[in-house]
Amino acid sequence: MDPRETSSSLRSLVARAFRGPALALVLLAGAAVLLSFFEPGLWLHPYVRGSFRVLTIVFVFWGLYAIAGLVPLWERILHLGATEEEKAHRALLVPILSWTTRLFLAFVGAGMVLQEFGYRIDTLVAGLGLGGLAVSLAARDTLANYFGGIVLIGERTFAVGDWIEFGDVSGTVETMNFRSTKIRAQDDSLITVPNAVLAQANIKNWGRVRHRMVRYTLSLPTTLAASEVRAFLAELEELLRRDPNVLEDRILGVESLDGGRIAVHVRFYVRTADYSQWFAYRSEHFLVLGELLRKYGVSAQPPLQEVLLTEGTQSPSSGGTSSTPGEA
Image (cartoon, rainbow, N blue to C red; front, side):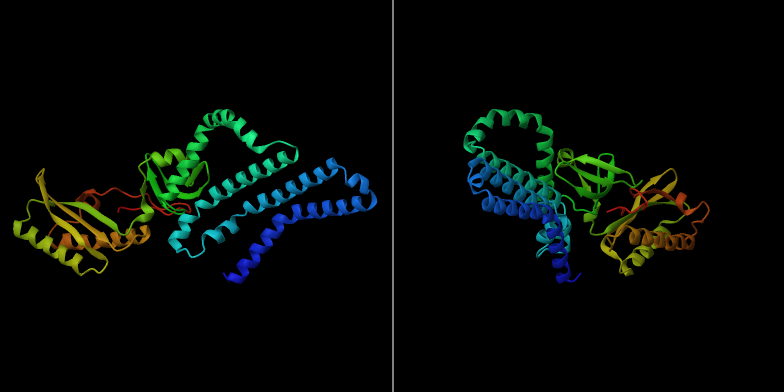
C-alpha cells in the first residue's frame, strides 16, 4: 500500500475517533463563551468554572482513550523500520500496548478530575497502598497472565501465524491480548489459553522450522544378499546426493535384523519449511523408492506402506485456514 494512502487512512481513523470528544469540547467552549458574555457573574463562580474544567479534562481524555484503542495506529508505530519477521512479533504487542495505554490514561484522567474536586493525589496514592495489595491479590491471575504475555513477547516465543504445539494443544496463533492467546486448532475450533499457562509450557514452534525431515524404516527380506543390500543403499544414497532439494545431513543404513527381515533406517532433510511442499516431495520420493525396491526384487505386493515398517511422527494434514506443521 502507498505510504501516503496509509497516512491518509490513519488521519481519517484518528479524526473519526476524536470526533465525539472534539464536538463536545466545541460545544463546551461555546457554552463558556455564551455564559461569560451573558452571565459574567455566574461564569466567575468557582463551582461553574470548576465544572467546565472537569468536563474539559473528561472530553480530552475521552478522545485520547479512543485514539489509544486504534489498532492500525499502533501497527504503524510498531512497524517502523521492522522486517517482516519483526512485524509478526510486534503484532502481538498491539493489544497489550493498547490496553496498558488506555488503563494509564484512565488513571491519569481520574486523578486530574479528583484534583479538581480538591483531593490530594499523593494522599490518595498512599491511602491506596493497603487497598492496592488487596486488589493485587484478587487480580493475581490477571497480573500473571499480563506478565506472562510480556515474557512470551520479549522472548519471541512465537508470532501471529505460527503453528505451535504444547501438551495436547496445537494450532495457529491468531491473536494475543493482555490476558490470553487465541489458537486456531486443526479442526477450526478456537482455543483460548491463558498467557500464564503458555509462559510455563514447553512450546514447540513449527513456524520456526528451517527445513523438514523425512524419516522411515524399510523392511527388506533376508533373501537379499549382503552385496545386494549394499548396492541398494549405495543407489539410494546417490539418488539423495544428486537431489538439490536434499541437505547433506542424511543417514541411511542397516539398523537391525528383526523377525527375519532386514530393517534399513533412512533419514534426510528437505530444503523447505513449507508443509505442503514437504508433503509433495515426500510423496514423490516414495514413488521413486518403490521403483528402486522393485529393481532389487522387493515386490510391490504387499503395498509400499506395509514395506515401510515405521515412519517419523506424522504431521496433521492441512485443514481450514490454518497452516500445518510437518516433521522437522
